[in-house]
Structure formats: C-alpha cells, structure tokens
Length: 83
Image (cartoon, rainbow, N blue to C red; front, side, top):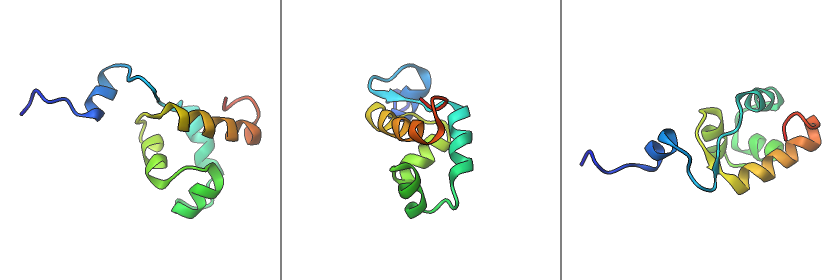
C-alpha cells in the first residue's frame, strides 16, 4: 500500500495545519537547559511529555498549541530569543 501517506510523510512534504517545527536554535537552548533526559525532568523544565521532546529534538512537528505554550514558557526563562 505505497499510496497511503502517513502523518510523518505529510509533515515532511509540506505544511500541516495546526503543526509547528521548533527552530533548531531553540532546540539547542532547550538541550542546554536539561539536567537529564527523563520524563520527570522534561516535564518540570518545559511542561511537555517525553514523546513531545523526542519529536522536537528530532525535528518533527508538534501541535501548534503545545508549541505556543512551550515557547511562551521558554520566553519567560530565556527572554525574547525563544519566542
């Protein structure tokens, strides 16, 4: 069934409504903020799940609403660079 497009294929080939890819510079800042890559540390630091962190870290899109909340939270920590 080669003609069936998966969600990840659609995300890579074009814009997906209500999804956002976090810029690499922001991801680099986030990596520097983590004491450990555990679910507890990721939730306490960014307010996101481990699954969402893996998507962000690997350059995959996440829901726009999650991205906006996370970037707002980071903006309070990092200043305007993350927003």
